[in-house]
Image (tube, rainbow, N blue to C red; front, side):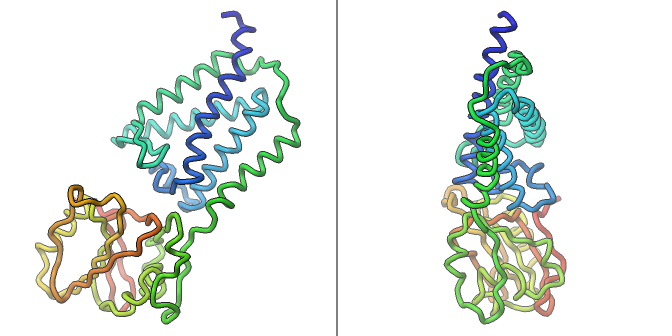
Length: 307
């Protein structure tokens, strides 16, 4: 293929690539949660909520710029695809079965997603986008306007997802606004040294938390989590009734009798069983636990790794 012919295809390949990027961005924008992000991205120090919205904003920004002015925006598209390839490689090496690009309901193996992104990247580079002569579809002011809309969209559409801490006695049930959240992050890393009335659990379970033992081991688990099942079974085997337990279940819409993993757990009068309100997807790595002494949170563990 002649050089000019290849270059004439560059805008097509660039737009094809960003339409694929836009598909994932729009899914995250309207239906996704930070749990859909790869672990390496979730680890960014911005916090899950801001990282999630920023990732969507960047993808939409590059999409709009490339659709309107491919000759100017192609380096951004190439850079984005290279970042995707690096992240997907880490996800694949971690042994994950799905890349999470389209949430948990659409499982795409990381290797398959790497192949798709890789083909798009090679098509763009092979078409020599630096030689594009095609006129842009929009003026620079129009590009700037769409860029501002792209950046603002995730913050406006997804909105505030933070759980405010309610003071003792403020409510007896979780506020309806909490139940309408798409996702809710439990900031366990900030709990140590706090009264149990000053953490998110008091907002979610105000009536129940006011009555739990002030000296206890609290465990947060999911019924479908095999690591949770192992952790609770170990606690049940060592339980002699001398230590109070607070077992807090994270609701899971996908839980069925067939996929429930949790069986054995501490049981008896010294055990308080609680369930977080249904509604948001709770962003917490289970199993997790913390120790209460005099109503104050002591040591905290999230995503407990079993030996």
